[in-house]
Length: 326
Image 1 (cartoon, helix red, strand yellow):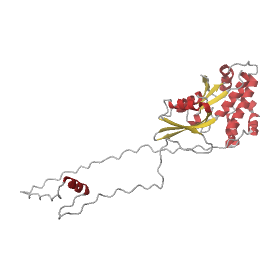
Image 2 (cartoon, one colour):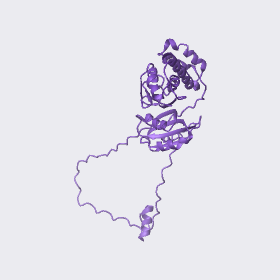
Image 3 (cartoon, one colour):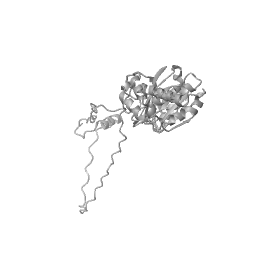
Image 4 (cartoon, helix red, strand yellow):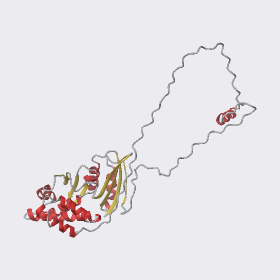
């Protein structure tokens, strides 16, 4: 398994995460994190994905053919290293000093008391073999004084300054947190009140996020989801016979998670609307992935189930989407 960092430029934000996320999932890669940023050039998309190394070329081909992507770069992800987006607008340094204006053209010295010529005209005269240009003849004196006429109004052509383009929005880099194991004690404290609070458990999940270390947040949510999903299966579906993943989702998975919030399932993808755990750039999809693992694995004939996080509303998508595969 390898982790790759995808940087792409697109022209429109709406539905971008979902469209690119589907292409990434179709190549067998799971989404680790994602981000959208506005820029003068368009929409800057950054994704960190994890998947089999043998599928890297397939992913590159899918991204190259994607109609939403103008250009992209795909490179190995280095944890803890902040990499600026390749398409982000460049900003001038605060110490930038513009170059001085060009020097005026030199004036050729007078020859035989004649009018001096600018350097370009003098050079042209030498090429043509002409001598110095003589002073023009004085204009003849007017025959009669013209009567005074009212002065004509002066018209000044005002040039409107060009409208400046949109200012470049600096991209905020990812802050790589250390990956810590789940806080088992905090999860056990949450589950101790599960039977009395279920299905109204989101408030306790938010308290769990605030209790554990930031680096242990995602793993703690995943563990809490697995334990809660297994508890729901044993309580409501313990007598269910084993079947394939798609049928198990329709009979057990969708009804179980529908007790928590509004979802739709079609095409092996679970669409979650208005997740209270996915706000302000903090994804809570790990809880839903763990919940589906806990409630489905005892009910399917395969050894395990694979949940791929396609996109999340905390990073600008309209909804959270999880792909469910065996």
